[in-house]
Length: 124
Length: 239
Image 1 (tube, chains in turn brown, yellow):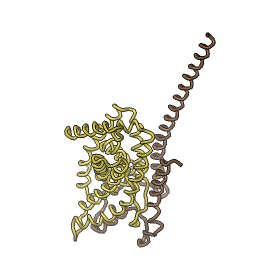
Image 2: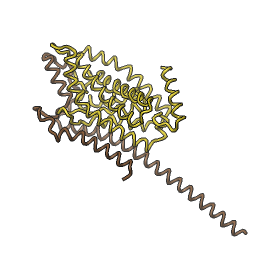
Image 3: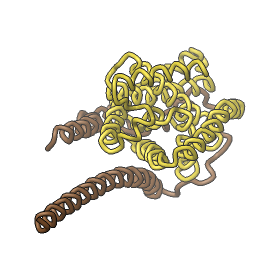
Image 4: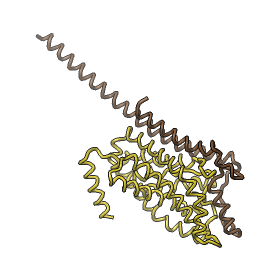
């Protein structure tokens, strides 16, 4: 593994560790419902501060179940990841293509030079 | 950081919408200009938007025992300057408001202001400041992304505290309450976002040197750095 790849892997491991440690150490255990969304907690806090507050608008469309919702979240992540990997794949392919085309040009130039040298020798 | 649909009083909802609108319009103009003048950057623009799409869909557990998600706006702000992110962030927020019932149309203005305006500008500011003092690129990128992420959630806390001051302890009491929900939860996630942004930037340095040099992220030599700096100050004067 190159040094570069090692650093990149280390970065990913660190991110994974940051996500796993709160779960591994049970940091949500003090809660009735561990690891709920912060957004939902804010809604609860609002109703604590102002018990009379009624949301005055509701979403035009709401995913009918948790499954549909997670499907749509997965779709969002998949679209993003797809575009990102397309970008890096395209770049890598282009670089490899350029390198190959350069190598071919160089080989042809060498071959031409060789041919010329050969015909020169024949003439002599 | 998504304030749920209908959870801001109408006056606040309108005010944040009015505050965000000029940034989004200005951002749309600079996005169009960027694509027209540099069609080759369309792909990288797409990749920056995609990064925001992925990261804001990733709900991660945090030390407070609740879950939240990064924003992914730092990368695009560093690459293309913050106005462009006002548009890309708004697109992400619209997707989530319309399809996921996450955030909402009435709170879109407030959510755009925190995630697509303040986050990118704060992150970009920190990045530029560090670069001016010759801090290594990746360190500056890390802190830029970290601040873009964390400042977004601080703004959300302020927005909610303004709308719902605590009856006993007032605005500051409410700020402490919302801050402990959002900002504290967000600290480890902002670290994650910083690390992921560094990872993507490292891959970009490998794959897109020419593009990064044109955008002023990479400078080729000491001379290049000097001209980049002087053009920066010229820009600052122009602004």
